[in-house]
Image (tube, one colour):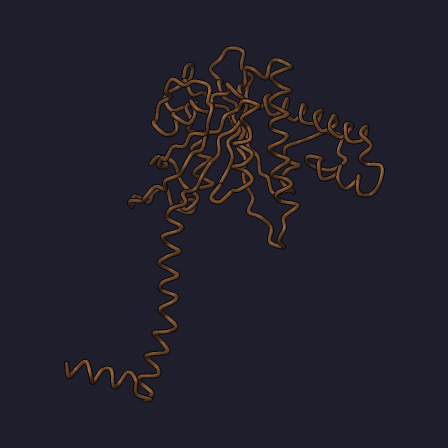
Length: 294
């Protein structure tokens, strides 16, 4: 009791030592509390990768393949689905890009969250809302059925959906409400079902979608002009904001999206693995891309 009284007397005294201790305590305590709360908040938000694309492209099969190592029987999704999975030991994360391949020391693979969204036209608002509020969003995997793209209807539907997604990312980058440029969200165009006989190779999927996106861009621009928009300066600005890629360009190329903060890559894969070697075509291309962007 005597010691407690002595300590309180010293703490309340106008001595230099008491003042210094009080000052240090008052400055460090808020920092420690903030650090503790910040770490707890960050730990709750796993890096998220969004799977989107037309209905029937194989998004849910890809989700189960990445989450479980093998695809599971699926049906048409009616609501978003999530899966928590860990980066495979064979995949290098962005933190390990400068790590020597001969380094045998143990490393902890990060965990990620995969968010699968329905591809039906009436349910695509789930994907759009996920893009509008990207808290921990690290990238998009736009999954397409490379066999369906052989038909004009399938190609047009896919291109129109992809156009909306890319335009939303472009507007997010160019029309930010603050002076700080939003973080770029990379996009992986997954040409799925490469095991199907009628499927198109990834390179052809890329070129056909670029060509079709150019047609969609011209059609929508013509629609704005026919409706009377674009006859004045404000209308011209509105047309430019709805123009995907380089404004006024004759053709569309995915490379045009880089100036708008969208880096797009194309890979071919197959969730079934038929016709491919073990490990090949079964999502390892997706894991490599995810690891580079996690």
